[in-house]
Image 1 (cartoon, protein in one colour):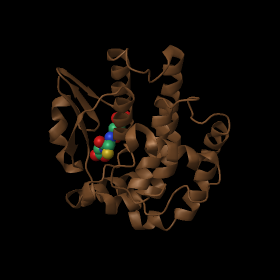
Image 2 (cartoon, protein in one colour):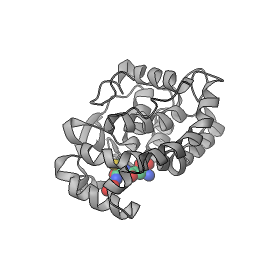
Image 3 (spheres, rainbow, N blue to C red):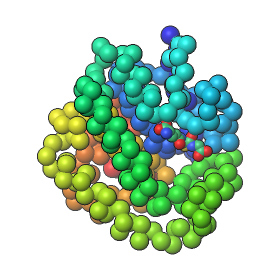
Length: 233
Ligand SMILES: N[C@@H](CCC(=O)N[C@@H](CS)C(=O)NCC(=O)O)C(=O)O
């Protein structure tokens, strides 16, 4: 049956959306290879069949699933014989917590740094939309936001501390092998390397860089295979 993942398309065929990377990696973990359908920001009508306007959207035969968390749960529940994303109900609850922490913590800290870069990485057809929506969100111009990069980088530092400490305990956040918690966190750094020509982890001497490199190697280098600035990460 047809398996299709609708995901964000940016300039130079970039696929930066962290939400879409969550779904890409969850599918790969389950050994599933979808056909990718690309959607620009200004083409929300292309996913209107899902009853909402955002990506990712997964189509699996008759089933249509939007929202990255719903997609992960759908894959876990409908492909139980493939490797588990959560490792049980306690693991699912913990992954949900990581999901919420990433959305409200790590992603917020990164987005102030990345938004100005993401404007240049947006598809040319989407740049006006991106500027208008993001400047409304931040309450200032993207150029004004960019002047505060050093302040935002300093604010990111303590947010990364639990990640550094956890990775001193095991090679992956989820233990000896990667699982959905790793994908949730990695997707943010994949976003960063897709839009920003300056490595967000350049100053890191911790296991975080080693982990990112391992994540880039997963699934025959799935995350390495797309257009990104930081090809050496
Ligand atoms: N909670 C959703 C969020 C999805 C989301 O925000 N996707 C972005 C990907 S770029 C989007 O479609 N944004 C539309 C917009 O900003 O207009 C999820 O986890 O999938």
